[in-house]
Amino acid sequence: MESSLHERAPHDPGARATTTLQARLRPWLGALCDAGCGLVLWVALSSALLLGASGTLRKLVDLQVWGLGLGVLLAAAGFGLLWPRPTAPGRWWIRTVTALALVAASGVALAGLHLQPQPDPAFLALCALLACIGALATVAGLSMLEGGQAGLLLPTRLALSLLSGATLLFALIALRWPGPIMAAGPVPSLLLLVLVAVAMVVASWMAQGGLRAWTRHRGRWLVLGLLAILPLLAAALLYLQPGWARVLWPLVALSVLAGAVIERLQVR
Image (cartoon, rainbow, N blue to C red; front, side, top):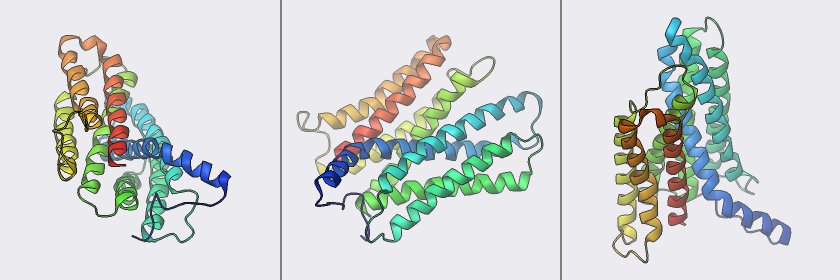
């Protein structure tokens, strides 16, 4: 592998301290970046719904802009994984930086288009396409820099990115949507995304001892609790208490983000 997120080992004590801090922040930065890319991806995919929209659908504009803004902000955490620049940056470092810049540029452009009264449909579709490509390429690039083609790391990261981004979008809907909230509406989508993400995470652990030894793999069980059990319990509660949506959906998003961070700690 030409470049790695773990290869820097400077001799200067100050530089070593900085590198140590970066190593500690790496799981957090990676989880935030992947979640931001996932959020940008979902909002960009839904942008076609706004073409020519008027009346009620125009209420989605603010939600789209908030989603893109938050997604780009979280995705920018990825720059903390890529700097300082390696002495000899390889292809994947260059590709990842390019993809992350594409996410930021296309996300900002897409948000600006949504704020226009009559955005050009062709340009909006192009920006949405670039945002989706950039988001997927960023998650893939960071995965390759972290572990190359080892095991199921890449598909696992993609699945977690989509799950994290979706829960952030559901939380934004609960917090920002004017009028009646969908409450339990996104629960079936959440269930599907959770099943896919958990299946990929567990499959990636099978070659590393699985889950059988509780005392040895408590962190992995905690990951499953944060990624699946707590979010699904909170989502099920929405069927009984729809009015709690503004609290429960942000709780689901925070739980999934925490699970994604701890999953990275298990990889380390």
